[in-house]
Image (cartoon, rainbow, N blue to C red; front, top):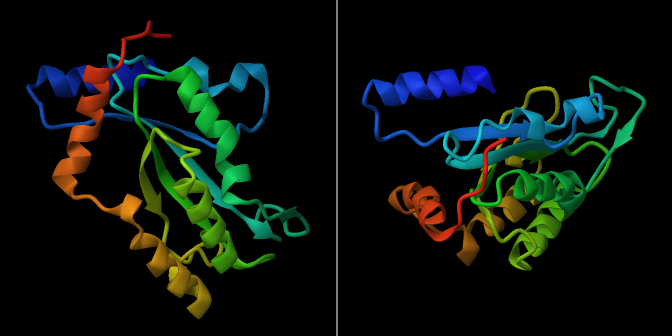
Length: 186
């Protein structure tokens, strides 16, 4: 938290006014213990424009647990972390800074369809930005990992709620700051 605030203060102290600040945490803590709660690291509303979450559907047999089954839906991956983001910083918009699904252990195209249905339902009203991790690295994350995944991903990106331009996105944090009542910092 202190390092984040320090960098923020250096940048703003140098006169930068075209920067938006993202504080992000992983969708699950490891270890999952009270001392490791992301809320303890929140720098405060004065320092944060966006709250970010990172998470993945790791599927079956990821490199870090070759015999494990970690296939989870979008909602199972992000619902608790989204609730945490709303508790920690209710006056800031939420982004998913990194997310993806593997092909291993389930149906990636269906996973994307289910994600679209959940997002379309309004279950995540303050989620304003999603960044799909599209590199084949530890797992086949890219939406091009199968023809079905690519077709579903392409269809998803054409949904009405996915429309917007960079200048629209740049105003989101400011709109939140103006429309919400400030809360105390941690």
